[in-house]
Length: 341
Image (cartoon, rainbow, N blue to C red):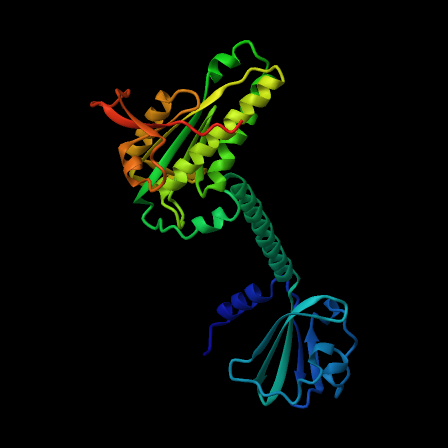
């Protein structure tokens, strides 16, 4: 197709700008007939008529005789002997084979930059995965990738656990930051590890309280069994922390736990700047209210958790509670852990 000269000039300029076009006219044996363009921009020898092109450009060794399709042949970012990258274009016209060289340093630099960015993103992703593993348990982050959240949220029946350090606010009064965080970290370790070991997900840490979700990922055990087992372990570990502190002459506190089970909305909350996977619904509020009424060393569960729990129920005792924000009184089931000291 013929184009007006201004169009051809424009396209040629756009294609070759800062790329230093050089050309060779070859026969089909790969021998040079003529040459021209910006040959001085490339680290190649001085051509001579009837010289094999492979004596000048090593990358063409073994390419001739060459069959060129109608659209030509393009080799991207091949390196010359001096290491300079070029794009090489072969095409046929006027009974001859033509070879064009275009400087590809800018393209190579851009590709290298993109590859570096990709590598940096992969390193960042790996770092985030390690952080998620610390909070969700080893391998849990990868398992969460299987959750279908295409619509932004979904409804699930899950068990929600809240655990809180009793008397912590009073303890913080007139204590140094170092004392406060030493106490907090000792108890949080006892509260978080049982959740992770028990297949739960730590939804959030709120001061001296932990919110966890069970049933989010597949397990051979029910969500209620996982939650109650984790709560029992939390109470036992917290009791051992308190015993160690007493022996060291330090203030010892206890932990209370609340669990509720039911349908919740699971989804991604937040903005484009920061998002988090979380749950909302009545069971979340109920679990928080039960935790607030649990005394030190006690676990309170709602009727749904009690009804679905397939473990030993003999350690539960029922009680009726009036919970803040709840219109009607609620039957709860109290569990006190085995003493192992």
